[in-house]
Length: 373
Image (cartoon, rainbow, N blue to C red; front, side, top):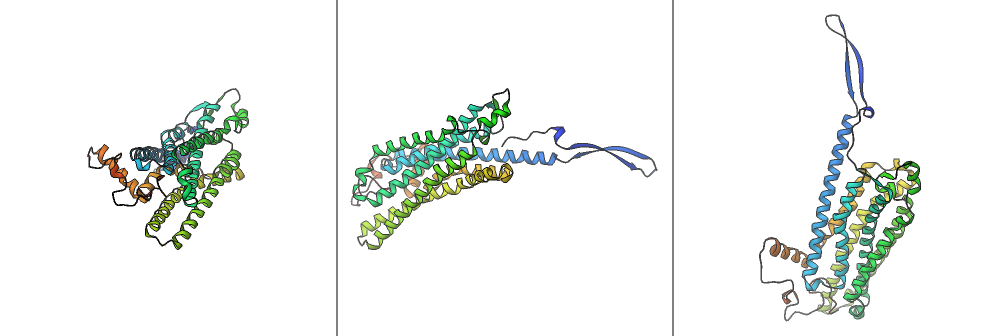
């Protein structure tokens, strides 16, 4: 959304000649300025200011919250596990949304004229980060499924080294899928007829990214299909945990399964929020493809963009509200590095591990460890 410009010739400011009869009987001609669209101009200006302010707030929340997640994972040894490799990958993608994607979106959305290929590259960055989030969520779902379906072989298969290799593969695949428009699937042909002798365009996302690509390839193939797979995986996880809880009588193992179920619920909530935040925008793209620009109000479209960006800021909040040990890590960072208060605990010390006499089930820190099942 760009700030509206006021031009006299197209804002409906018309001078009308009006003849009035005065009480003394003389006729008087005067002009009356009709400002029909001035109110519309100020309304659009306020809408742009609100939109830009919300984008900046979302960007700051994305950066601060996800830096906190990565910080907590790096400082606590018990968080250096396979699940948290993918959590860190998701946090990095969300951080880059706030640090790179949102500022670029605000900057180029109708503000500047830049070469077509430059606008296309900037727009593809958003697609890469979205795809990285989807694949990180898929990796988390696969990790949870392996944890409950083959618990005896899990620590042998899901090593930390393999998890980081999977993270690298997720990002490589995300780059391949997100930068696909650079290889020809874009609006270059339609823009060339409008550019005439100039190679610069008024840069907006849909000016360069093809709607068929967004709907058929990005939405149906790269987002909806993985979301369906993740839904199935979490359904199998909950079914397996529920069945094992019904037949398990041992107190320790039952407590372990309950913690697994709580963790799965928290991570499934992250997936649900991702779908809820991104679905409206993709559904509006489907409407735009079938009906044209008149099918979706501009206000609704920008609200969908805000909602999709806001998704990158909510995951750190979900972790804090749903997972006690993450919340404790946040508070410890606040006390030690913001308030400069040092307690007896240390992120890297053994005080964060299981205390003597407590069973090491691999879930002492809520998230499962590779050291036990």
